[in-house]
Length: 166
Image (cartoon, rainbow, N blue to C red; front, side):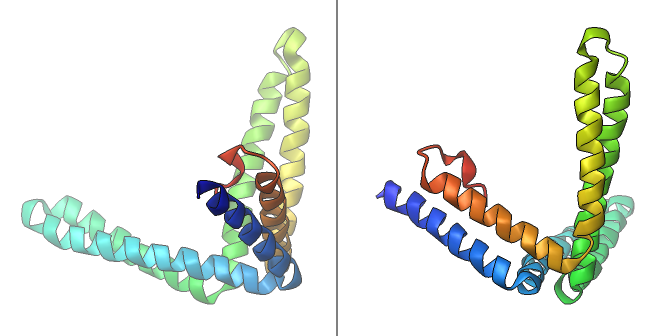
């Protein structure tokens, strides 16, 4: 029974990957909608916690309320603005690329292991290039489609459950 469940997840990932490649903007909007709904749930729970916390300590209650309001504002943009979604993801990837470059620079001074610094620098610059292009919602949709397709195919032909990480 578990075998059918894992295989059906793989097939679903492949189908969703193909759909995302055919309709990249819709897949970016779907990512934004799902993320936005999660942010609404988080925001509401923060607001409820903040109101309850105000009774005990005003400082932490106020922090919870502010976080809840910010979460709901972020949810609005995630749901209704696909460019915000791709820009946010691009920013996260850009920061990751900068971190790789910094690590790569330090790695250059590791003596005989400096080749790892060079490789990390290459990955860092490649990540910056990806971050630049992923700011376009259509390209983000293609990336999601390719990721779903590759993950679905790999999990379909392996017994390893690591590829199903949706």
